[in-house]
Amino acid sequence: MKKIKIALLGVGLMGKQHLKAIHSSKKASLHSIVDINQKSKKFAEKYKVPFYIKSSYLLKNNKPDAAIVATPNQFHEKHTINLLNNKIPVLLEKPISDSIVKAKRIIDSSNKNKTHLLIGYHRRHNSIVSKIKNKISKGQLGTIVSANVMCWLYKNKEWFKEKWRTKKGAGPLGINLVHDIDLICYLLGPVKSVQAFTSNRIRKYEVEDTAVVNFIFKSGALCTLSVSDTIVSPWSYELTAGENPAYPVTNQSSYFIGGTKGSVQFPNLKHWYNKGERSWWKPIYNKNMDVKLSRFTLINQINHFCDVVIGKTKPKVTGSDGLISLKIFDAIIKSSRLGNKMPIK
Ligand SMILES: NC(=O)c1ccc[n+]([C@@H]2O[C@H](COP(=O)([O-])OP(=O)(O)OC[C@H]3O[C@@H](n4cnc5c(N)ncnc54)[C@H](O)[C@@H]3O)[C@@H](O)[C@H]2O)c1
Image (cartoon, rainbow, N blue to C red; front, side, top):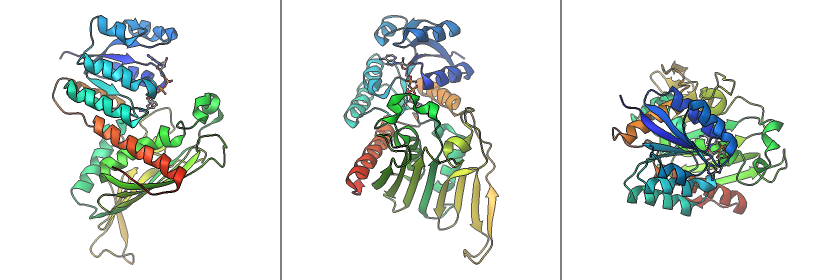
């Protein structure tokens, strides 16, 4: 089978993870690396591929079959549209962009060029997520009433040495909770409105260290998402799913979704229910949901991207999905500032 040759733009924290994922994928090979920082050339040397300092140089030469854009958010529009205009399918890191206007231009470009765009919300490529999605879709939990999503973790001093991480937009809402927003919307459908409260009481940086967000879904279900990077706790997807070996994994859960017939917790998958009559007076049982934790979501994502490139399947996370989570993120920030409930249009 011919491997899909993928160029990587941006070989920072996330780009390095993509390098490993491409290397481990049976469907992909690394075509080249583009990075504005000359020091990144060492990665191209390691993998014996061409190195370019600008994406325009990449496009003048032997073009790749596809590309991953893992540059800082403010460059997503420029890099992605450039590639799409050259009919190169793109796996674009989350968030789709740093502005809704730019995000729409990226989506328009993908449509105009009839070239695929996949957004890097990689959790959706975890088999436990598909299992939960199926359970909800089949009505096994009854009507979904409410959900609780926890994203509590403790970022150490080292993390804040990069000063941009103490500034607005770089807090746990934008870095961590955006993944949870995408995932809970995938599981429970479109959001009608949001309300949020933020605090920087502990770290006192410009950016929030803690936030509580409420969603009303169009279905009528309610959800609370709680995020903090200053609580010592195991209850976040990061510390429970085992996707990234950099985090010590626990057997806890961070998602709790409840319906009129039962509820589920995950990543430590359990389905809770009554046998016979549903009642708080009756014993409640749990069934372990027979799926192994999938630690390879980035590789799964690359494999899926390759299938998209050869036309075998459609993107699991589209540009429109990326735009929706960006709109919700924007509404959360506005709500926390104004104190209002914000509609999602
Ligand atoms: N999916 C995830 O879980 C996840 C995790 C972390 C970051 N991200 C996303 O990945 C992207 C990159 O984040 P990061 O943390 O890796 O950042 P980073 O700062 O560690 O790396 C960015 C890289 O891009 C390069 N770069 C900067 N400007 C460039 C340009 N104009 N042209 C080419 N290269 C350029 C830098 O030299 C650097 O190597 C962001 O969109 C971020 O939101 C996603």
